Length: 401
Length: 75
Figure (cartoon, rainbow over the protein chains, first blue to last red):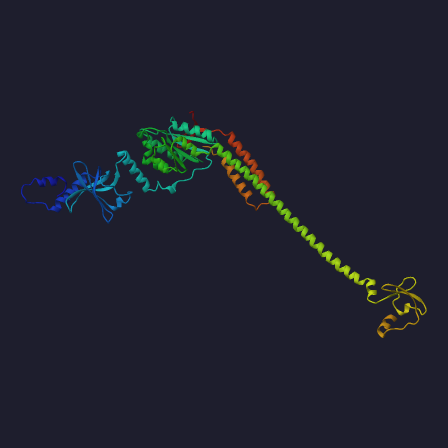
């Protein structure tokens, strides 16, 4: 037993001699089917859907005349956002096979896509989107911020389209300090995909590039389709500076929009997002000027305060010294007063002086019979020396010298 | 292709630095005055760059040997 044709030749034998077992025939049928229909896209309505605990999905696809059993394994269906509703029209990419255990013809579904709104276009788009999502190219975390003041901007678009004219006019009005580099490519029709990819690869070789705008003006669904190509989307994702995608009109969303760092609804909007406006810049320059002035004023103020603090400290030191001296002065003058002869006289002492006013301090100064003046606390007394005598040995000794 | 000349962006980012240091207070008055003067001159340069600049649009061409060239575009 070998190739597929054997099955049919065997069926032509009249007798039961050499009859096949059930296993043989189902196995053979499976081989023929798997070899004859390796991979097909099938469109149909989901019916009898059942998701098992194992995660595998079992359902039928049917149309008005026929139906076919389908299985979608967990490893394939877990990428889908959810289960298809009963009766949903879907496309499935499947491998036809025979389930030998039941002798049942069925499809092993690898991909399942709803057909609503757009049929095959949508199908292709969904497939491409799924592929990009699998590679993480749609992750929000990939989005890079756009530069504040771009100087060199590359535009990948058609040279004669409205998109380029719009971009040039918006940028020259808002922020003319820019060098715009155009990479001219076809954006629709044959070769457009190839040229767009080539242009996007080329931008990676432009030195000092700040930003890339890729896009085109509005057109029919077919015209815009190149921007839904998975290849083009991957080329956008591979650009090594921030990217803005601007395809068609407000409502058109292309695959490149999902991959770019920013999606702009139109080429004009892309240009507005790409550069600041002159007015904004004027505002921020004025703001800088104000902050400069305020900064300087603050420092001048700080300087003044520091100076004031310093002079306060200085006068405090001087004052403290003055006070110290004042205290010293008072102490000294107190001492001085204590030494004043009048004070001594008040305590009962008196001073003796001769007629010339010399103070008489010891016995030897008083000649017997001589006159002297004795000053007490409240006046003078004229006196005469009658007799002198020493008061003690120690005093006498010192006086004798 | 030629590299970019000193730019508005350079002026702005240096200005931001200057304003930042002026707004922090560990500077003496002399340093502050110097920064202020530099700031004023850079502000003037930035304003001039802005008022004097004109958008240039060029087309990028790839030569047979793979080098990149630019050509004027008439729109």
